[in-house]
Image (cartoon, rainbow, N blue to C red):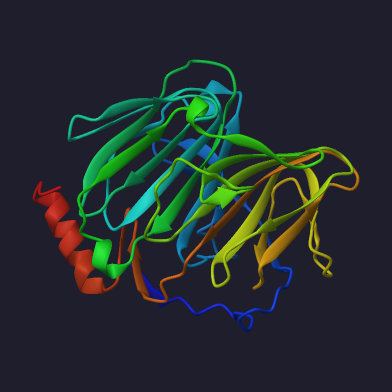
Length: 295
């Protein structure tokens, strides 16, 4: 078990328009989870324990069935949300409340665990590429014991727009270019964009002031802002500083990245495996409730 208190980001003075710069570059670490699924952990590892309200970011990518076929058998969650975004492959999910769904390429599942849920995520393929992300998003203290719910978003429900010449975005959550994403994420007012830039393209994307934000490049390379750590290669996560906008360019080659932002809670965080609460006492209660079958 561990507890830590997130710190507030530095926010610019009201009315002062400014570009966000990369304050830190992090590379993921190979690990495994579930029943042995191989993945890369980017947030939730020693180099970046969390970025309030984001608790964990995993990228899973393999065309070797042995790396993913065992999947994630039934396991519990309490106190936060999980966001699964598929780029390739098929994953079936189900829970102890009778909900089932199929994640396919381009789809999103935003699951609010709330007071507790038991669910599984199992591959529905025996070969081929399995590729995507899972992001854990914290819930504020007042919402940690809310009723669980799923938002299953099919690929065709995610709008795709042109933000600038050679720049297209899939708007999963939040707003970009006057288009709103289908996911409801009221607690964090989250922004989640999948950006595709052609070589030579540049775009400025507004982000809410006060939100913590990051960019993760999953194909090619990109330049974020104009600071000393502006270059991000495939597999790099850039933590963004304060400001109104972020400038993203692909000066040398095409790039694909996710751009994510959320309102921080600045509350104590107690974590133990699949439980994320505010105090150690609440963690103990979560473990007792799970063992007693109260999820």
